[in-house]
Structures are given as C-alpha cells and as structure tokens.
Amino acid sequence: MNKIKKKVAFICVHNSCRSQIAEALGKLLGHEVFESFSAGTEKKEQINQDAVRLMKELYNLDMEKEQYSKLISEIPKVDVVVTMGCNVECPYLPCDYRVDWGLEDPTGKSDEEFKKTIAEIEKRISLLIKELN
Image (cartoon, rainbow, N blue to C red; front, side, top):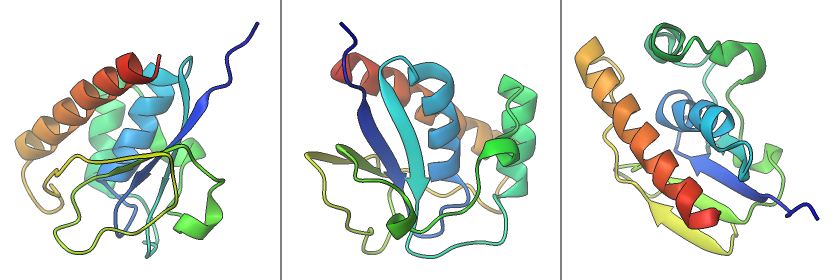
C-alpha cells in the first residue's frame, strides 16, 4: 500500500534563493518521502541567478525548468512548513509541523558562501527525509 506523501513548503520572503534551492533539493533527494513546494510573501521576477548557476554546476539541476517565484497563496495546503530564516517576520502558513532553519541569505555574496548554504540545505533536507519517513 502506498504511503501518502507529506507536502512540505520551504518559505521565505522573496522565494528566490534559499527556498528555491530547498524545493529543488527536496524534489531531487526527498521525492519518495514528500512533495516539495516553495513560496514567499513577495515574488521576484526570476530565481536568483547565482543559485540557478550553482545548482546546475553542483547537481545538474535546472531550477528554472520547473520552478518560479510563487506567493504562499499559490501552493496547496501543506503538512510541514520550513522557514529559511527570514531575519524579519517569516510568512505564516497553516501546517501540522513548523521549523525554522535560520539560514542566512547568500544573495550578493561569493560562490563559496552560496555553496556553504547549499550544502547546509542539503544536510537539512536529508535529516527531514529521515524525520518524515
């Protein structure tokens, strides 16, 4: 019998960098355990281009192929909300379980800072898979 997958939303204000990386890695690594979404309270015209470039380089993933900046009102009802560390008031979304990863936004920083953030998100996605499995 197939287990119903949890729906996980990765949330930050602009939905252009950390939450998009988490959605992509969630889809790549956690697709057997949960469905991944990302959203924010504001939209950007495009996903952070440094994130897009580095995710292609590191994982051969094209985030722009299936992902785009979305508002929290544009995603389905979710079971788990992961806020990325908004440094201000994180957006609210009803859920059964909520956690804040408290990650600093690497936007405008070096590739090394981006790679550290990406590695940390990958580590936390792996832990989330274990928790929800």
